[in-house]
Length: 478
Image 1 (cartoon, rainbow, N blue to C red):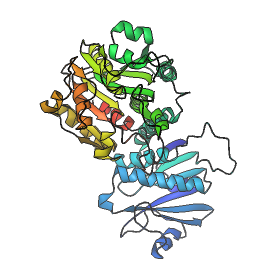
Image 2 (cartoon, rainbow, N blue to C red; image 1 turned 30 degrees about the horizontal axis):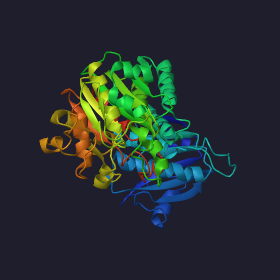
Image 3 (cartoon, one colour; image 1 turned 180 degrees about the vertical axis):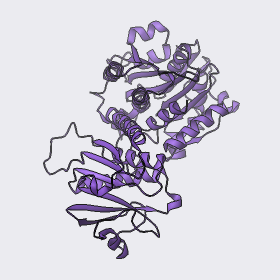
Image 4 (cartoon, one colour; image 1 turned 90 degrees about the vertical axis):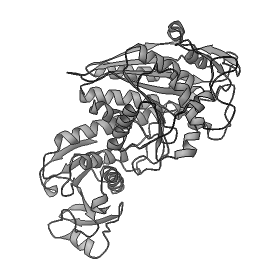
């Protein structure tokens, strides 16, 4: 979908469908030449409640109203919702071009939200389905009409939303196609396309040679070649500390020898969601030319049961020398991340953020509304929280404490990868990761509840691409 901004009135844009927001207690922000929208509001058909739609025709065009709710409560997130529902209705109507009349006083956050919601709401993943001539496509063009020039805002919002959709493509692809090797190929493609971005990839032998005993142990059970993907980005006139983004990319997680129940196991193709978000966020950061120095480390592997697979009770040695008793092979993500975090620090990362679908316990605690945020450095946690608020990807800070760290101490090794007691599972997982950060300011984001099937208007089913907007905003803030 082509996206652009204009200062021309909506009726002069050539769009076949014009979308106008309606706030509670107010008339439409714009109207058709014959006053059709005002009449629609007056008769009660165009309702101002958020997401409510009305439709009329005037001058050979469709005119659609979208309820925006209370003006004082309207923000970028509500704009994303409004953009998504309008785009989806325009598609049903067979529209080829949709123009939004920006509400009065629209600033950059709301304009970005309307664009992001529209681009995300228009997402489709149908590459494995036969074409259906009755299935509507489009719109092919989105226009934001505003009194002020919002070209730069619209362009940036489009890049970020398209990167989030690219992450969703990676998430939604089946594990037989989206292998660690395929994920590495995507990283190479981005590096070949974007200025300032380079990539290094190591396979099974390279991972072992580096001393990544924890990562290598997880990869042992699969015939698929694992991939340690390291992206380097140096922006123009880069300032600030070197950022380190780390992503868990278990492209399929059976649980290994500690095998999962069969119900919903197909969803474990989404266990690479953290890696997908990191990869596509870095691509967006490079595309926007943001002035930051950045290292991204993505650990990609399958977790499979086989005669070679790591077994409960095995002890492995991580890159930083820590020994780990693997008492649950389904707690594999933290083993991968342990070595990737250590590697990011060794490469010079001065601020760390890792994203991982790490624990089911975080879903019990926070559902799909917030990702769990863990970290010991208050200033860095606050910086990441601010980026989360600005991006609309919500996080909730969870506690760390020496008593939780005590729970992961091992009997036969330095630490265990999973506690026997079913207590504070997300927190003890974070305490495990903390041991591999070398006191670099670090935030862990457990995105297990927000990575797929979030039931949001712009990402209801399948992969959500959660984390892309947050990471780009974090880089933008420097």
